[in-house]
Length: 337
Ligand SMILES: O=P(O)(O)OC[C@H]1O[C@](O)(CO)[C@@H](O)[C@@H]1O
Image: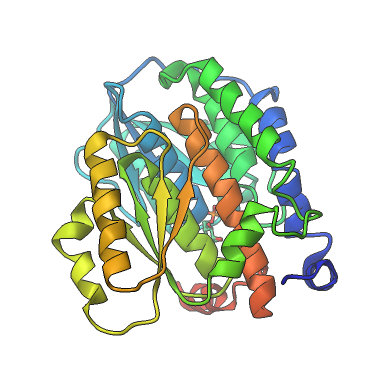
């Protein structure tokens, strides 16, 4: 069992404190005085960012998938050719210095797209200031991944005129985050904390199964297990995996399946969950189901991310690793030109 003293020894003032404050940060960020964008509704929005910033684009993609706004999420150096002067390109980099994101900002400027950028200073802020490009400064807390909530909810505010999301859905997501944080927090070191239950269960690298709308959660959890818990993790689409991934269980391996389920998945998806569970039981493979809160898609996504991010931090403590440093990322960055 994870001990609070261990938790405190590793990082008392850092990441845990920020996660405990996520509900407050979400509310303050949504009701901040950042001005809303003055763009007209457009048919193509492009979210450009890497890692945690890219995961924010995945969330917008999921919540807009039921509207007639076409969303492209780009994680890399180049924007696709379908981006033109009528597209809105949303640049997100918490540090404001990520090389790939800077390259995408360059691309968007060359194409002549409408641009709005979000960062906590950095080169992106300087470029926007110099070239009269819309930019909103959002505060970074601890690290890019821990700053997720301040960026997501600030962006929900600023992008309001071009994003067809009901305000009531956004408020519902914050209220649910406030509710679950009463049991999921760094002071509740007991099995009544669902994040601890998950971290206690994980002994090997997880394979995270997800339904369509929860893909951003699976991506974010994979990233958090890698960056915080320092372990490998894989993701599998529940439908697609029955055409390939399921065969991978055919030899002995050390993976553990985690089933990320929505409260109201499609009937066709529910059928797959039942078949997958039956398959695991027939192979004596233990699995863990994690079921979303009830509510709109944003509520489901943000509450699951909060729970699972926390589990990745508790897991780091259980494994005896510090969740904060990401030394191999620095190895790559130092070699990039
Ligand atoms: O939001 P930024 O500062 O562009 O960083 C993107 C990603 O890069 C990292 O900082 C690692 O390089 C991640 O933690 C982060 O999610």
